[in-house]
Image (tube, rainbow, N blue to C red; front, side, top):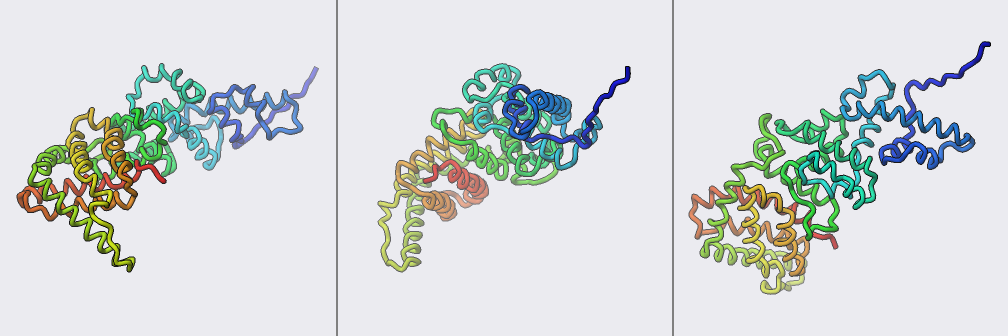
Length: 373
């Protein structure tokens, strides 16, 4: 007895974005079917079958999403370029809560086994945690030790749009240098300031930041720069030099306040002794030099965020400094250094590029870590 059979072919494949997101979040197809709001008028059986079909498509595509350069050349599931861009962007999306838990740690198999704890702490499904972990580890391994800028390497290898490629570059830098985000004094801070800081480190303190050549990269700190920072500290912290530096800084602040008063037309100048940035100069600057001197040691580099928050941000806050005081501190430090007479001309000339490069990175980093009003 002859029968009939209906066959439904979709070419190119239609991807339901809402269902795809539910799959990424680790929801079962039954749960996803129950959550759908785009299927009014269809029976539950049809909705469930369609959701199962969608999940089947995603499982097939997952292999190619893990190697996005092959997504457009595979001929199993036909998709448009626009759909492919969306799938890649969503597949490599991540939860901030999750990244704060794992960024800066060694992306090892042992850490992957402990994702149950991360899932419990964050409320993110284990399936989603594993996807996000595997994505970051995959990106990290594909670009590790390769010359060039991270965001270019990542964008070309994983077909990520520029913004997401930059974010992954910053995360790779944090992981490569094992920068700790889980210290007690960093609790409650969002991910964005750490990403901004890592971008400044990459742009200013790596070999790419100073050379920009095809054989340089922005994954590792420039070792020569770190060695210069180590030698800069004792030169600037000798008693005569630091005393003169402090006097020159106070003079710089006084002159700056005079200019502000003239610009405002008030003719009133705040006393130097009550200017908050002057009260902490002798505390913050030695701390900055100590942090810089320690960056050549991996353990101290790892703690840079903790040290900056504890030894720089906290004193600035406790002294009621604002963002303009941060600018005054760093700009005044550089200007004062250039006028030093107690440091030999040869040493002053030698270390000036190093201090300028160091301060050039610290200024935006301090702004990034400084709590907004």
